[in-house]
Length: 250
Image (cartoon, rainbow, N blue to C red; front, side, top):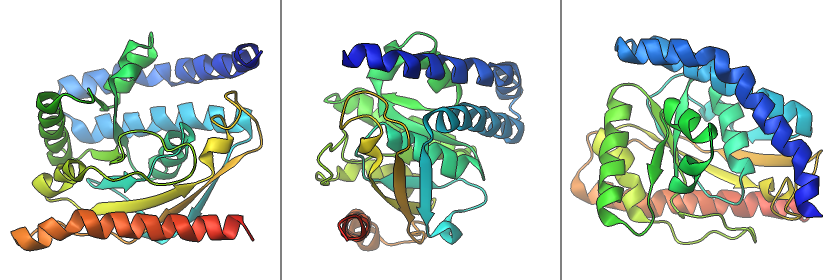
């Protein structure tokens, strides 16, 4: 029964991709020409077109706390806890209002027809979990994207935490920012799992709460200072999640 209830959401998803299709050619042409500023702008518009359609159809609400900490442009690395597929919707809507972003995501998405190519087109990078060589390649590719002005989002837990807790962060995730020497924007997110994971079909009228924490600088730091960043950022995100969950239980 739950699969049948997912059919309308699949249709919404496909329609959203087709609406964003008009940006495919300018994205590809500007990338080929090395015009990264125009490529980023077209990626931003494509992502907004895609996510706005889904948010409207699903009556999904993105509540942002600390919006003043969102940069107007990149490159930066957003590091967040991960509870649900809705985390991508929330961050895509919130950040694409200002600038383009790509994600470090599981290679599972590469296998989804049409969508897998779109994900690559907007400068997302697939990671094969359990493959150290691939992880090094992903970090290297992500650093090059950042140097070209593209921002990235990464979920250092490596998987969704469906019960609302935070799993241990993988410290290697932070190399993306420290090697490129770009700021880190920590994000604490809660409640997104109510859109899909709690019932395994899309339930309309749900929300996600996001705290945008102040940026953490990575440039010009000593090795000792860089070594402190993963624990510092993880603690910030954990405290933010506790704050969101405390409000939820009032």
